[in-house]
Length: 185
Image (cartoon, rainbow, N blue to C red; front, side, top):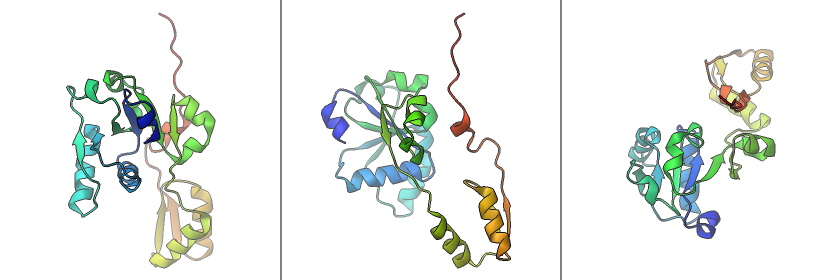
């Protein structure tokens, strides 16, 4: 919000994953006092509508159209992270690239992604809370999708809980990939 006030002529594009992270950013903006519309990429529209239908108050959310993009200086636009350096983002007035992720704590990650405004927002729980939550569920089987899979699987199995990693094709690959170098033609 401070950057929007400092650079009112620039659009502020916030990369955030569509399920949960984008809506958390919206909620945090509202709690911080942002009362203007929050603009979203079309890929976030349906899941954001679902959150609002379930009673999560995110304030006024508007879908960005092609005609809107040149006019959104000083506004906050939330989009999938992959759109930050895509052709889609180049139609905004002098866009500020922001990215909401716990990975933004690592300066090299922000630089690698071309992020001008890193927003350190992590949804990961610490080890003790994760273990307490697993026990509290009473689940007899746990599938681990993200993080230190081997450690969590081992911890579960030593407590008699069946656990296994769930390998999702393509999930997490975006963190491991470095931007491709362009070669001259």
